[in-house]
Length: 312
Image (tube, helix red, strand yellow):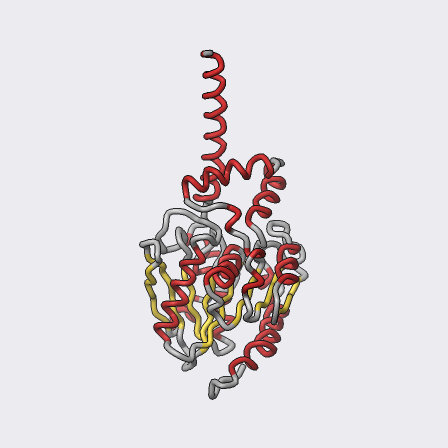
């Protein structure tokens, strides 16, 4: 009997250790240092200090429904009601969003960039890959709508986890923006984790993920299965531009293709030729901007003809 108990507790200890290990990897994924991101963007010429310092902007603090604050920067050099919110990827911060901010500023939009929970200067203890982040994004949208008032024309641009967060927000909470740009999102978190487990550790997702999901429910109060943009994509009626790199081997381009295929209504797809994950803009800037312009011209300008004095 004692031997059976020892065996049981040994197995329980192993299972618990494995569950804690994998949920720690998810909840507390190692982030890039803020200074590293800033220097990387400076060295690549995507942040020019003199331009950024001279930009008409202000720091903002937006309360999250979970009790912490989200730190953002609102750039408003234009007298316009057209705004874009930038939603960055996991391990990144708002400095990574500045290149996209500049893209939209040059097209006459004002832009709000912000740090997701547990990233940059924002609060929050864990990363949830879009589950809790979608509620924070709604808080950002609500704040901006209240700040600007009626007549706001709003777009959201998301990269990687930020794109998945955006799709979860629009598909599960509210289709609250006039247009969306989803750059390299995963279509289903469970499928993405199974793929990464196989690629990085040669482990079968079918054995590890149910255990990780059990511990994640207990430790962070949500299920991996709840983080599935493809399960809600058909709730989004407003236009979406899907972007991915054909050579992305971290989140496979087939995930974006599946999202594009399932999306009803206005949509476009741009598959970049060069670059790995989240590098479509960096490696294909001219084509990326051309896709943005075509999308805006096709789906955004025509939907807001009631706004006087607005042109793209």
